[in-house]
Length: 381
Ligand code: GDX
Ligand code: MN
Image 1 (tube, rainbow, N blue to C red):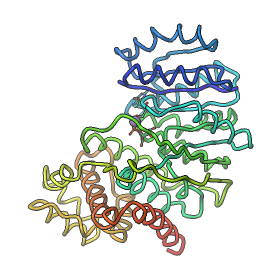
Image 2 (cartoon, rainbow, N blue to C red):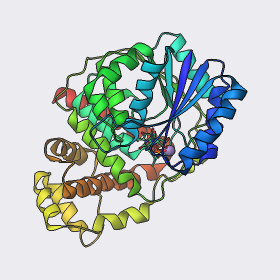
Image 3 (cartoon, protein in one colour):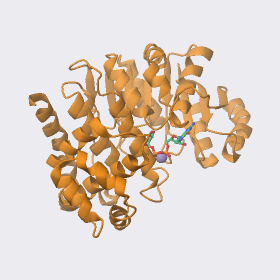
């Protein structure tokens, strides 16, 4: 029997409550846990409704505030780790599921498919979805790229959505994750990277299950909303760079289905808005920091100050840039943070204009092949 956990911050309570009701009425679920960031209006609304859902479904519905467990920015990591701790200390259930609170397309199938994977003996089941070709730009250019460069012989680069917040863990793996200092410390957006990394390093068997309806959820307003997430996800990979990971490992991916037309046509970010961000807000210090990067990059980025440019940031140049960033980037330094954001924007725009423009199938094929080329290159380096 399982616990279903929803970390949440500032969500529409109706969306979360609908998902809680779906989870509470699933035959495999014994308890539903919502872990909120703060005691705000959303938190109060969820806490108010929980007893009625509990009565109707006949399973416990618990609403908690997140504890301060880590030492980075207090964020989703504290929320997820609070849920893990509750699961291990307050229940004796066998499995924990995590789902984002803002999912509009959530259904009992998500829980069933995860349970079916675990029934086959996998210690982790991760959900993956069809994504637009210009979505998941942090996943492709930060996380999967970093995993390919640093641990090319492991399964890490091959995990479809390493930042996904929808996953199931068995109790024994949950114990190992929470006991891992690096996981506990990661209170920010880096938590998904740390969970993914630690499950592979601990040798867990992983199944990725495909959810064809996709994950419809709250949209970002501006690209700058992604900045904190990008920086914290990169810093999380960088913090692990000296670590060793076993080669190979049990990893199966359910074959995907046809991609819905709306996903194929969706544009994942504001292209015009991003162009402006390449040119704005340069400081003399950022210009100095460019000296750590390959020549093509500092020439191109300096030119951006008068007119947005990105054509130089191709696959090859991004590989070299990423290596330099692993060595020199400092997440405490505001100028480095700005610069990382701009470099990643240049990579995202270059990819959009030279690959995504050629159509959905081409773009997704390109991204997967790119990871493969990075893996080969890192192995033969
Ligand atoms: N308790 C708690 N505390 N929950 C939080 C916090 C926090 O500080 N910040 C965000 N959340 C919740 C949020 O309410 C939602 O349920 C979930 O975490 C994901 O946040 P959302 O704002 O929907 O982000 P997004 O971009 O949709 O998230 C996806 O990418 C993240 C990532 O790339 O790091 C999603 O797959 C996340 O699970 C993943 O962490
Ligand atoms: Mn979301």
